[in-house]
Amino acid sequence: MTSMSVSPAYKPDPQFFHLGAEFGDPVRPADFPRADIRYRNQRAAATVGLDTLTDDKWRAHFARFEPLPDNQPQPIAMRYHGHQFRTYNPDLGDGRGFLFAQLREAGTGRLLDLATKGSGKTPWSRTADGRLTLKGGVREVLAAEMLEALGVPTSRAFSLIETGEALQRNDEPSPTRSAVLTRLSHSHIRFGTFQRHAFLQRPDSITTLIDHVGALYYPDIQSHNEIGAKAVAMLSETIASAARLTARWMAAGFVHGVLNTDNLNITGESFDYGPYRFLPHNDPNFVAAYFDQTGLYSFGRQPEAVFWNLQQLAGTLLQVTEKEPLIEALGAFPPTYRLELMAAMTERLGVKPRGEDADTELVNAAFRALAEGGAAVRWEPFFFDWFGGRASAERALKGPRASAYEGEAAKAFRDLLEPYEADRPERLSHPYFARSEPQELLYDEIEAIWADIADRDDWSAFDAKVAGIGQAREALRGY
Image (cartoon, rainbow, N blue to C red):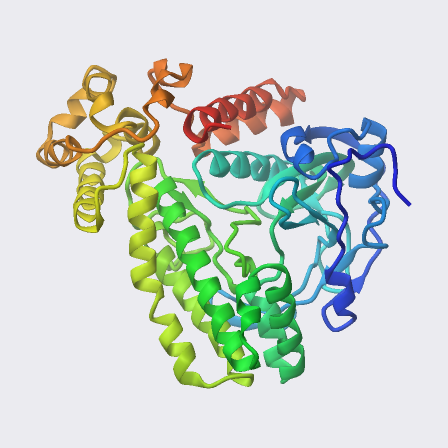
């Protein structure tokens, strides 16, 4: 039955649970002592018809996880394996989250997932408590907001509810406050989902997954009659999506931190933000996770890491197709990534592309200028200063970083930028560009926001940051 609490835009379409027991386990959510709404993404909720829920209904669905109308009858902890820092782990799966519901996005008709983090123990929790720290939830909200503003395909933090438990953690002061997060994403089918069924020698399950992905996410692959051709076509689609995502991480100066095969999905959306960082300034060796002691997932190695993960996905498909077409498909990643990086960087600079050769030269010059500037030129302010190309030259050369733009590499960049026209120049009239400093999301600021919450339960800096990132999104994205 339907509910008057949802809007007419609400279109339930539960699909994953039809795959059956080989793909996920029905679970019960934790029973939390409290349910204090700390973040409610009304903009995202409106896209799936849930913006009209009362706060009581919101708590019912996103703290107690009572089923949404006509949707999935109970939560499902998804089954998957994965490489963690390139060591295979067959003991993975949703250990502190589950797929809660699936529904269609208004306007696009895309199938979207509502999935959780910190919702309690599952069969895959092992020795963990299945919980999420409130700090971790705050960090994920901020990451998702910032990445969306910068044009990165990302899950959206949908709901953050403080749950009233005291958690013990080894890597932060304890006891610490607890929360449950719900995210809205295009898919939670991971590379590791395929890896599990390859590990179990189940080509039948791999075939089922490919057909599922084709029916719901990449319909063009359904034009192939043979499963082998479908597998290669699905890999090609995933490669293109992953190349776009990686290029946009790089243009955003974003370091995911944990690029394991269970943290990449087949639709090319970034999700699950743990020890992420945004670059303070250009540094290919910058590492987000303190435990990444070899720099495997450093900023500059992210394209290599994603390509390695795509190779593991391709390996799972050997159970349903031949090796040669998979190798040929993988060969498309480097050139696709390069083209996507040109597109992402020109978009970040707010200029219209001028062709592959010119754009490549400009992008290389931008990286050299960033490197030359060192700590004096922070990543985000560089793109803020030069947004719109020559239309912003006077603003940049009279701004707080003017002296840093007088170096040899910076002058070469300025010369190459001169012939570029601003893309949608009306954006420069947005009040955001009247500021001297852009929105950033650096480590120290996140720590300060959390300190206010932890010490005084003061959410004003968090709320102001979300609003500020929203202004940046409006200026840069137009929505």
